[in-house]
Length: 35
Image (cartoon, rainbow, N blue to C red; front, side, top):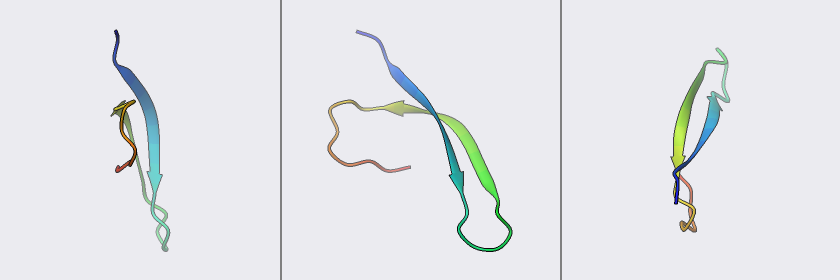
């Protein structure tokens, strides 16, 4: 059984438009998500 990673980009909603991109580890058994 391996680990699942995804590349995620989070972007600000307001002015400035900053963003953050990173690899996240995915818990495939989770029912809720949080970044």
